[in-house]
Image (cartoon, rainbow, N blue to C red; front, side):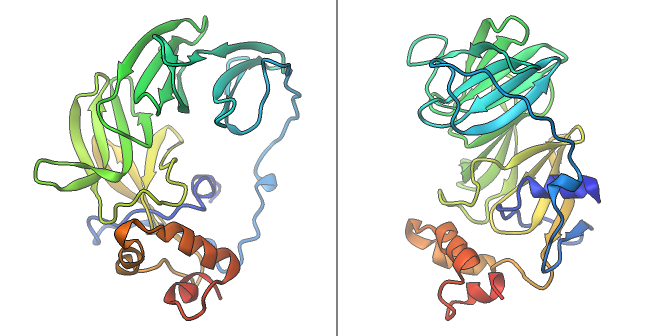
Length: 288
């Protein structure tokens, strides 16, 4: 249960993908109507003050990663938008990469990945649609890989393969849309996964759809309670999330409310937190 709990808590605010094969069995995670489990019961915490100065200020800590005896801290805010490295005692070591429009620079970072085996550090430049690679130990720039398509999230499946997510879908020549695109390290497309049943630029937690867990990668998509395992260039059913007698809004309802580019996410979040308009069926789905 602890393993399931960690996976789902990462994306509680997000609402996930429709199943391509309804006959498949899923591992069900039911939080019930009143989930009171706290993370403090499962985590061991340590307080490490980080050294800061005028050139090293932190505002929005999006991700923290411990590698060897170093702490990698990613500040995703517009003002800072940088990856910093500290010692395990909190002493500042360096900043990785520079922000700008020149060679070897990035426009806007959204993620970073560490390959401890190959000793490669990869920065994901959403603004410049590129991957910048650095030496994990010296922090020296290695190369830049331009990315042909827009994307919102991505992840390295292994040394040679990547997976990419775009909420508006990757289109085929037949104008079919898919949420995920699998490519080799050079960006050549291998497969399209996850037919896009609903496309919108307004999704809940739309920037983070891919999650690493116990050595595997998992994906969820908007507005349905299912989590998929990405394996061997395919999507396998993994977990289905339930919240007692509450249920997700029907996809047809989501499509109707999101028609014309309207933000269905904002509408649903409003109902979830403030009960909203009780004449709307979404209230009965989210609020009791």
